[in-house]
Length: 344
Image 1 (cartoon, rainbow, N blue to C red):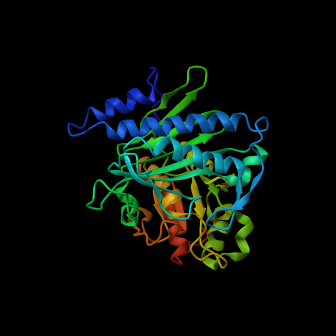
Image 2 (image 1 turned 90 degrees about the vertical axis):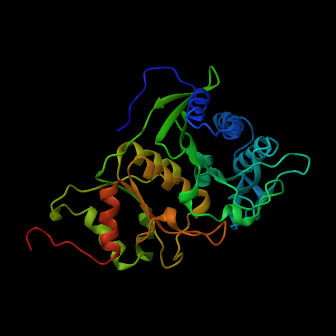
Image 3 (image 1 turned 30 degrees about the horizontal axis):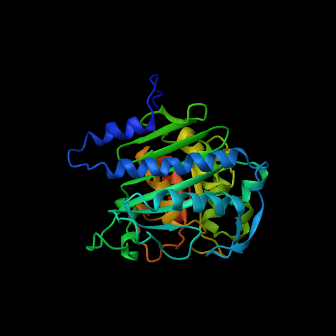
């Protein structure tokens, strides 16, 4: 459920009003968000023009994960860096597409924040015109040197220390969903006036929904406990309605639907990838913060993901996130606790 607003509120006005609630605020965070919004507008424009602007297809390079880099991936990555590296708000950045930390050029000031981002989530869907998105996560720096470049320690913080997180979704419309730890708000972009307007305020997801999102093509790679859970949700003989499979293959799009309607999203470990494939710092942490702020639950099957202590900025982790009752149900199966059919 979400409270739909009937007043015109731009995202910059919303951020400014939130800033006024904190007497110690300097305005740096608000200005940093304005820089990020500029990058998101530019990326949205190029996504809308894909097919006309020679931005579809792949480049000749691979990213740090050994994946072929799409042209639009590269464009989004460079756009965010160019928009964020000179504002004086960040001491460093990290991108899913880049191997190490992205330093702020020497001629610019350094700030008290670090930014992690997945410039274009859902790369495999770019060329077939399926929903894609940009995910971001912001932390305060923790190293004592407040004037120099950021260090790895500034990034390797558990997700519960995020000061903001969110995503832009490029679908039938462009929308921005973000949180600063005080609820989840959604803004929709109106390209005719160049503004993001508040369209859903204090979004809260249902406690349960009979839908699940997972790549069932990996069924043969899962352990017995997870296979039994997937069999359970599709079997009405347990006394519940059969769950519907809803899987887009773009994590941010799958999470967007679950935030709106409820259900569970899963990207578990398997025989080939014991720690899953989603990146903890660029995808799981920011999406998990949104899920929790909207009343949901996010775990690795056993532990709250926002409490995990990262060891590498590119590490992966299994994840189960969505409506609280659905995730608790999945966790029970992971522990080997299987229900009996009502007729047994």
